[in-house]
Length: 384
Image (cartoon, rainbow, N blue to C red; front, side, top):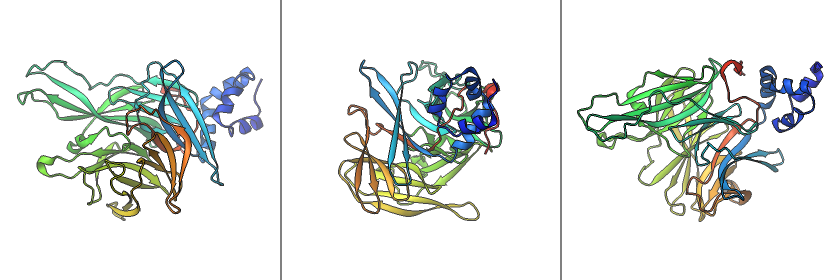
Protein backbone atom coordinates (compact mmCIF):
# COMPACT_ATOMS: atom_id res chain seq x y z
CA UNK A 1 0.00 0.00 0.00
CA UNK A 2 1.38 3.40 -1.01
CA UNK A 3 1.39 6.04 1.73
CA UNK A 4 -0.27 9.26 0.57
CA UNK A 5 1.59 12.57 0.49
CA UNK A 6 -0.81 13.95 3.09
CA UNK A 7 -0.02 11.15 5.53
CA UNK A 8 3.71 11.55 4.88
CA UNK A 9 3.46 15.27 5.63
CA UNK A 10 1.61 14.61 8.89
CA UNK A 11 3.99 11.87 10.00
CA UNK A 12 7.06 13.96 9.23
CA UNK A 13 5.98 16.50 11.86
CA UNK A 14 5.56 14.00 14.69
CA UNK A 15 8.24 13.35 17.34
CA UNK A 16 10.51 10.31 16.88
CA UNK A 17 9.08 8.50 19.89
CA UNK A 18 5.65 8.48 18.22
CA UNK A 19 7.00 7.41 14.84
CA UNK A 20 8.88 4.49 16.35
CA UNK A 21 5.62 3.21 17.81
CA UNK A 22 3.82 3.73 14.48
CA UNK A 23 6.28 1.43 12.68
CA UNK A 24 4.15 -1.46 13.91
CA UNK A 25 0.94 -0.09 12.35
CA UNK A 26 1.61 -1.60 8.94
CA UNK A 27 4.49 -2.62 6.67
CA UNK A 28 4.23 0.48 4.46
CA UNK A 29 4.62 2.78 7.46
CA UNK A 30 7.56 0.70 8.70
CA UNK A 31 9.32 1.04 5.33
CA UNK A 32 8.49 4.76 5.12
CA UNK A 33 9.82 5.67 8.56
CA UNK A 34 13.09 3.85 7.82
CA UNK A 35 13.47 5.54 4.42
CA UNK A 36 16.46 7.98 4.38
CA UNK A 37 14.44 10.55 2.42
CA UNK A 38 11.71 10.52 5.06
CA UNK A 39 14.36 10.74 7.79
CA UNK A 40 15.69 13.90 6.14
CA UNK A 41 12.21 15.39 5.73
CA UNK A 42 11.50 14.68 9.39
CA UNK A 43 14.85 16.20 10.37
CA UNK A 44 14.10 19.41 8.49
CA UNK A 45 10.80 19.72 10.34
CA UNK A 46 12.52 19.03 13.67
CA UNK A 47 15.31 21.54 13.27
CA UNK A 48 13.30 24.39 14.84
CA UNK A 49 12.56 22.32 17.96
CA UNK A 50 15.64 22.52 20.17
CA UNK A 51 16.09 20.65 23.42
CA UNK A 52 18.55 20.41 26.29
CA UNK A 53 20.28 17.03 26.61
CA UNK A 54 21.65 15.90 29.97
CA UNK A 55 23.73 12.72 30.29
CA UNK A 56 24.12 10.93 33.59
CA UNK A 57 24.81 7.46 34.94
CA UNK A 58 22.38 5.75 37.33
CA UNK A 59 22.40 2.38 39.05
CA UNK A 60 19.42 0.18 38.13
CA UNK A 61 17.59 -2.33 40.32
CA UNK A 62 20.10 -5.03 39.33
CA UNK A 63 22.98 -2.96 40.66
CA UNK A 64 24.31 -2.21 37.17
CA UNK A 65 25.10 1.25 35.88
CA UNK A 66 22.99 2.54 33.00
CA UNK A 67 23.49 5.44 30.67
CA UNK A 68 20.56 7.85 31.02
CA UNK A 69 19.77 10.73 28.69
CA UNK A 70 17.30 13.33 29.97
CA UNK A 71 15.80 15.46 27.19
CA UNK A 72 14.38 18.76 28.42
CA UNK A 73 11.93 20.98 26.54
CA UNK A 74 11.10 24.47 27.82
CA UNK A 75 7.79 25.86 26.55
CA UNK A 76 6.95 29.51 25.93
CA UNK A 77 5.24 29.69 29.32
CA UNK A 78 8.50 28.31 30.84
CA UNK A 79 6.87 25.01 31.76
CA UNK A 80 9.25 22.07 31.54
CA UNK A 81 8.81 18.59 30.10
CA UNK A 82 11.43 15.90 30.69
CA UNK A 83 11.90 12.65 28.79
CA UNK A 84 14.26 10.12 30.39
CA UNK A 85 15.80 7.50 28.11
CA UNK A 86 17.65 4.58 29.71
CA UNK A 87 20.22 2.95 27.46
CA UNK A 88 21.55 -0.28 28.99
CA UNK A 89 24.28 -0.71 26.35
CA UNK A 90 26.56 -3.52 27.42
CA UNK A 91 29.63 -2.33 25.55
CA UNK A 92 29.25 1.40 26.31
CA UNK A 93 30.63 2.60 29.63
CA UNK A 94 28.10 5.03 31.19
CA UNK A 95 31.03 7.17 32.32
CA UNK A 96 32.09 8.02 28.76
CA UNK A 97 32.14 11.75 27.96
CA UNK A 98 30.10 13.59 25.33
CA UNK A 99 32.47 14.90 22.65
CA UNK A 100 29.86 16.60 20.49
CA UNK A 101 26.39 16.16 19.02
CA UNK A 102 24.68 17.08 15.76
CA UNK A 103 21.42 16.21 13.96
CA UNK A 104 20.32 14.02 16.87
CA UNK A 105 23.52 11.95 16.99
CA UNK A 106 25.69 12.03 20.10
CA UNK A 107 29.34 10.95 20.19
CA UNK A 108 30.64 9.41 23.42
CA UNK A 109 34.30 8.74 24.08
CA UNK A 110 37.13 8.07 26.50
CA UNK A 111 39.46 9.43 23.78
CA UNK A 112 40.59 5.88 22.87
CA UNK A 113 37.22 4.49 21.77
CA UNK A 114 34.33 6.43 20.25
CA UNK A 115 30.65 5.52 19.99
CA UNK A 116 27.83 7.12 18.03
CA UNK A 117 24.45 7.04 19.75
CA UNK A 118 20.99 8.19 18.74
CA UNK A 119 19.14 8.46 22.08
CA UNK A 120 15.72 8.51 20.39
CA UNK A 121 16.12 5.34 18.31
CA UNK A 122 18.47 3.76 20.89
CA UNK A 123 20.86 2.85 18.09
CA UNK A 124 24.56 2.78 18.86
CA UNK A 125 27.74 1.70 17.17
CA UNK A 126 31.40 1.63 18.00
CA UNK A 127 33.58 3.44 15.48
CA UNK A 128 36.48 1.60 13.81
CA UNK A 129 39.81 1.55 15.67
CA UNK A 130 42.19 4.48 15.29
CA UNK A 131 44.82 4.25 12.56
CA UNK A 132 47.29 6.13 14.77
CA UNK A 133 46.87 5.00 18.38
CA UNK A 134 49.10 2.25 19.69
CA UNK A 135 50.77 1.40 22.97
CA UNK A 136 53.87 -0.74 23.22
CA UNK A 137 53.35 -1.58 26.88
CA UNK A 138 57.11 -1.48 27.22
CA UNK A 139 59.54 1.00 28.72
CA UNK A 140 62.33 0.00 26.41
CA UNK A 141 64.32 3.21 25.73
CA UNK A 142 63.89 2.67 21.99
CA UNK A 143 60.10 2.21 22.10
CA UNK A 144 57.33 4.78 21.94
CA UNK A 145 53.55 4.97 22.02
CA UNK A 146 50.83 7.00 20.35
CA UNK A 147 48.11 8.05 22.79
CA UNK A 148 44.98 10.14 22.19
CA UNK A 149 45.06 13.75 23.36
CA UNK A 150 41.56 14.90 22.46
CA UNK A 151 38.60 14.10 20.23
CA UNK A 152 35.61 15.98 18.82
CA UNK A 153 32.49 15.19 16.79
CA UNK A 154 30.54 17.47 14.45
CA UNK A 155 28.92 17.99 11.08
CA UNK A 156 30.53 19.18 7.85
CA UNK A 157 27.91 21.15 5.92
CA UNK A 158 30.22 21.37 2.90
CA UNK A 159 30.47 17.61 2.32
CA UNK A 160 27.18 16.78 4.07
CA UNK A 161 28.93 14.35 6.37
CA UNK A 162 29.53 13.72 10.06
CA UNK A 163 33.15 13.76 11.22
CA UNK A 164 35.23 12.87 14.24
CA UNK A 165 38.60 14.57 14.72
CA UNK A 166 41.17 12.97 17.02
CA UNK A 167 44.50 14.48 18.08
CA UNK A 168 47.15 11.87 18.90
CA UNK A 169 50.42 12.43 20.77
CA UNK A 170 53.48 10.35 19.95
CA UNK A 171 55.57 9.88 23.06
CA UNK A 172 58.98 8.26 23.23
CA UNK A 173 60.45 6.83 26.41
CA UNK A 174 63.80 8.28 25.50
CA UNK A 175 65.04 11.43 23.80
CA UNK A 176 66.90 9.05 21.50
CA UNK A 177 63.57 8.11 19.90
CA UNK A 178 62.87 10.36 16.93
CA UNK A 179 59.13 10.56 16.19
CA UNK A 180 56.47 13.15 15.35
CA UNK A 181 55.04 14.87 18.41
CA UNK A 182 51.45 15.35 17.21
CA UNK A 183 49.35 13.75 14.46
CA UNK A 184 45.66 14.16 13.60
CA UNK A 185 43.13 11.75 12.13
CA UNK A 186 39.62 12.32 10.76
CA UNK A 187 36.76 9.82 10.66
CA UNK A 188 34.12 10.29 7.93
CA UNK A 189 30.82 8.58 8.73
CA UNK A 190 29.83 8.25 5.05
CA UNK A 191 33.04 6.32 4.31
CA UNK A 192 33.28 4.58 7.69
CA UNK A 193 37.04 4.97 7.93
CA UNK A 194 39.81 7.13 9.35
CA UNK A 195 42.33 9.21 7.41
CA UNK A 196 45.24 11.38 8.51
CA UNK A 197 45.49 15.15 7.96
CA UNK A 198 48.31 17.61 8.53
CA UNK A 199 48.63 18.83 12.11
CA UNK A 200 49.85 22.31 13.08
CA UNK A 201 52.14 22.27 16.14
CA UNK A 202 49.76 24.11 18.46
CA UNK A 203 46.92 21.59 18.07
CA UNK A 204 48.90 19.42 20.48
CA UNK A 205 47.93 21.86 23.23
CA UNK A 206 44.34 20.57 23.05
CA UNK A 207 43.31 18.12 25.76
CA UNK A 208 40.28 16.01 26.59
CA UNK A 209 38.66 18.34 29.10
CA UNK A 210 35.31 17.26 30.61
CA UNK A 211 32.65 19.99 30.53
CA UNK A 212 34.67 22.18 28.17
CA UNK A 213 34.97 20.62 24.71
CA UNK A 214 31.96 21.37 22.50
CA UNK A 215 30.77 21.61 18.90
CA UNK A 216 28.87 24.68 17.67
CA UNK A 217 27.91 25.79 14.16
CA UNK A 218 30.56 23.88 12.24
CA UNK A 219 33.43 24.39 14.68
CA UNK A 220 34.72 22.20 17.50
CA UNK A 221 36.29 23.88 20.54
CA UNK A 222 39.03 22.31 22.69
CA UNK A 223 40.78 23.66 25.76
CA UNK A 224 44.45 24.34 25.01
CA UNK A 225 47.06 24.18 27.75
CA UNK A 226 50.00 26.53 27.32
CA UNK A 227 53.59 25.49 27.90
CA UNK A 228 54.72 26.83 31.28
CA UNK A 229 58.34 26.42 30.22
CA UNK A 230 57.93 29.12 27.58
CA UNK A 231 55.32 31.10 29.53
CA UNK A 232 52.62 30.50 26.93
CA UNK A 233 49.11 31.25 28.20
CA UNK A 234 46.21 28.82 28.10
CA UNK A 235 43.95 29.28 25.11
CA UNK A 236 41.13 27.71 23.10
CA UNK A 237 41.95 25.49 20.11
CA UNK A 238 39.29 25.40 17.38
CA UNK A 239 38.78 23.03 14.46
CA UNK A 240 36.68 23.94 11.42
CA UNK A 241 34.87 20.75 10.39
CA UNK A 242 34.48 21.82 6.73
CA UNK A 243 37.86 23.44 6.08
CA UNK A 244 39.67 21.01 8.42
CA UNK A 245 41.76 23.85 9.80
CA UNK A 246 42.93 24.45 13.38
CA UNK A 247 43.06 27.92 14.96
CA UNK A 248 43.79 29.47 18.35
CA UNK A 249 41.69 31.86 20.44
CA UNK A 250 42.99 33.72 23.48
CA UNK A 251 41.14 33.58 26.80
CA UNK A 252 40.30 36.53 29.10
CA UNK A 253 43.43 38.03 30.63
CA UNK A 254 42.10 37.64 34.17
CA UNK A 255 41.91 33.85 33.85
CA UNK A 256 44.23 31.97 36.20
CA UNK A 257 44.56 28.25 35.49
CA UNK A 258 45.81 27.60 39.04
CA UNK A 259 42.57 28.89 40.57
CA UNK A 260 39.88 28.47 37.93
CA UNK A 261 38.05 25.88 35.89
CA UNK A 262 36.33 26.67 32.62
CA UNK A 263 33.52 25.47 30.39
CA UNK A 264 31.87 26.73 27.22
CA UNK A 265 28.25 27.50 26.47
CA UNK A 266 25.99 29.29 24.01
CA UNK A 267 23.83 32.32 24.72
CA UNK A 268 21.77 33.90 21.94
CA UNK A 269 23.98 32.07 19.38
CA UNK A 270 27.15 33.61 20.84
CA UNK A 271 29.84 31.58 22.58
CA UNK A 272 30.22 32.21 26.30
CA UNK A 273 32.99 31.12 28.65
CA UNK A 274 32.21 30.13 32.23
CA UNK A 275 35.12 30.75 34.62
CA UNK A 276 34.63 29.40 38.12
CA UNK A 277 36.80 28.39 41.09
CA UNK A 278 37.93 24.89 41.95
CA UNK A 279 36.13 25.18 45.30
CA UNK A 280 32.39 25.72 44.76
CA UNK A 281 31.98 28.12 47.71
CA UNK A 282 35.14 30.10 47.14
CA UNK A 283 34.57 32.96 44.68
CA UNK A 284 32.34 34.34 41.96
CA UNK A 285 31.37 32.62 38.73
CA UNK A 286 32.32 34.90 35.84
CA UNK A 287 30.62 34.59 32.45
CA UNK A 288 32.40 36.06 29.41
CA UNK A 289 30.92 36.58 25.95
CA UNK A 290 33.01 36.02 22.82
CA UNK A 291 33.03 38.89 20.32
CA UNK A 292 34.52 39.06 16.83
CA UNK A 293 35.36 42.20 14.87
CA UNK A 294 35.20 42.59 11.08
CA UNK A 295 38.60 40.90 10.79
CA UNK A 296 37.37 37.94 12.88
CA UNK A 297 39.71 38.89 15.73
CA UNK A 298 38.30 37.51 18.98
CA UNK A 299 37.91 39.47 22.18
CA UNK A 300 36.01 38.85 25.42
CA UNK A 301 33.64 41.04 27.41
CA UNK A 302 32.44 40.16 30.89
CA UNK A 303 28.72 39.53 30.61
CA UNK A 304 27.78 38.54 34.12
CA UNK A 305 29.13 37.69 37.56
CA UNK A 306 27.27 35.32 39.86
CA UNK A 307 28.00 35.86 43.54
CA UNK A 308 29.36 32.97 45.62
CA UNK A 309 26.61 30.50 46.41
CA UNK A 310 27.00 27.58 48.80
CA UNK A 311 26.16 24.19 47.34
CA UNK A 312 26.78 25.04 43.67
CA UNK A 313 29.26 22.71 41.99
CA UNK A 314 29.50 24.32 38.56
CA UNK A 315 27.40 25.91 35.77
CA UNK A 316 26.04 23.72 32.96
CA UNK A 317 24.40 25.89 30.28
CA UNK A 318 21.97 28.71 29.53
CA UNK A 319 18.41 27.72 28.68
CA UNK A 320 17.37 31.35 28.09
CA UNK A 321 18.93 34.80 28.37
CA UNK A 322 18.10 34.81 32.09
CA UNK A 323 18.07 31.14 33.11
CA UNK A 324 21.11 29.02 33.77
CA UNK A 325 21.24 25.31 34.60
CA UNK A 326 23.77 24.42 37.29
CA UNK A 327 24.84 21.33 39.20
CA UNK A 328 24.49 21.30 42.97
CA UNK A 329 26.97 19.59 45.26
CA UNK A 330 24.09 17.36 46.45
CA UNK A 331 23.70 15.86 42.98
CA UNK A 332 20.75 17.80 41.58
CA UNK A 333 20.26 19.92 38.47
CA UNK A 334 19.02 23.35 39.47
CA UNK A 335 17.88 26.36 37.45
CA UNK A 336 19.18 29.78 38.44
CA UNK A 337 17.53 33.02 37.33
CA UNK A 338 20.23 35.64 36.81
CA UNK A 339 17.72 38.50 37.23
CA UNK A 340 15.77 37.38 40.30
CA UNK A 341 18.67 35.34 41.78
CA UNK A 342 16.24 32.55 42.59
CA UNK A 343 16.97 28.82 42.40
CA UNK A 344 14.64 26.03 41.33
CA UNK A 345 15.50 22.35 41.77
CA UNK A 346 14.64 20.21 38.74
CA UNK A 347 13.61 16.53 39.06
CA UNK A 348 16.95 15.31 37.69
CA UNK A 349 19.35 13.61 40.08
CA UNK A 350 22.74 11.99 39.68
CA UNK A 351 24.43 9.28 41.70
CA UNK A 352 25.55 10.62 45.07
CA UNK A 353 28.67 8.44 44.84
CA UNK A 354 29.36 9.51 41.26
CA UNK A 355 32.75 11.18 40.98
CA UNK A 356 32.42 14.96 41.04
CA UNK A 357 32.38 17.17 39.05
CA UNK A 358 31.33 14.79 36.25
CA UNK A 359 27.94 13.82 37.66
CA UNK A 360 26.13 15.51 34.77
CA UNK A 361 27.01 16.51 31.24
CA UNK A 362 24.64 18.94 29.55
CA UNK A 363 24.40 20.25 26.02
CA UNK A 364 21.86 22.47 24.31
CA UNK A 365 20.44 22.82 20.79
CA UNK A 366 19.80 19.07 20.70
CA UNK A 367 17.41 17.84 17.99
CA UNK A 368 15.33 14.69 18.37
CA UNK A 369 15.77 12.79 15.11
CA UNK A 370 15.65 9.44 13.32
CA UNK A 371 19.12 9.85 11.79
CA UNK A 372 20.95 6.52 11.62
CA UNK A 373 24.31 5.93 13.28
CA UNK A 374 25.30 3.59 10.46
CA UNK A 375 26.26 6.10 7.77
CA UNK A 376 27.80 4.50 4.67
CA UNK A 377 25.45 4.12 1.74
CA UNK A 378 22.52 5.31 3.87
CA UNK A 379 24.04 8.77 4.16
CA UNK A 380 22.09 11.39 2.23
CA UNK A 381 22.09 15.17 2.04
CA UNK A 382 21.44 16.46 5.55
CA UNK A 383 22.36 20.06 4.71
CA UNK A 384 19.93 22.78 5.67
